[in-house]
Length: 322
Image 1 (cartoon, rainbow, N blue to C red):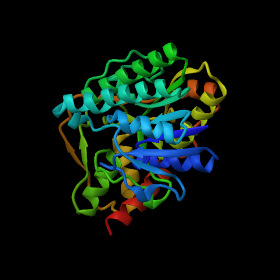
Image 2 (image 1 turned 90 degrees about the vertical axis):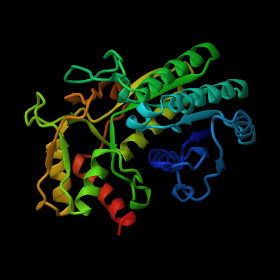
Image 3 (image 1 turned 45 degrees about the vertical axis):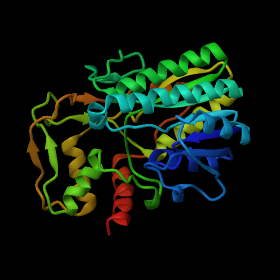
Image 4 (image 1 turned 180 degrees about the vertical axis):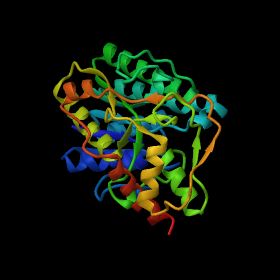
């Protein structure tokens, strides 16, 4: 098979490209380089610069590279930005996916793997979020991911494609410093930024119904995200009737206070006391994945712990912020 990986020059995408290439898969990358970097890609992996919104580009790439499977990672992913620019997010994430699927169907692509998100669940009031937990997204980003899952499942059912949607939980870490996350939108890089500026890391609310009063999340190493894609792609290649929706998480919760403490220990900045501020609107108290189904379906489970995520992310941060 030849796999097209959209968004393959981005943070998560480049890890998936690396893992699939090391696994012996034949790959081509389509990326508009709006946030991705070409130097992230392994030597020998072809890069086509363009957007999934451009049907002519999609058709050409699928044809010229004889693509038989697609891993769709490209898209916009910032919650606050999606609230400010909902039309932009629906265009990029939903219309982009629709255009890609339309091209895939006409090109005879038979496998489609979609990057989704735990944001589809919204604010679940359960100890462990299973794939059967009702989806109730609370922002346009989550809405576009849920709509994407519907599109992928419907297209697969109607046009005979094996499909899978993978719901990521909180991604952190890096395989190598060069592949580290460039953004400062998630807890780990946000704390790095504050500590390296000699400022107090912020904790948004300490009055939640949790053991230490701060939010609890399920953090997953980006290398584990990548290995889950390899396992899913192989399942789709082997099972032409597959139609899967799976969580990618560790099934273990870590509070914000605990995470900030680990980050301070790794960075050596235990001298700066965190600053507790008001809650952020829409932050659920606890979101932790059940990882049972992905273990059953793909024989996959996470390998890395939280400290390994922080240490690898810190190495990448220091490389980019000397």
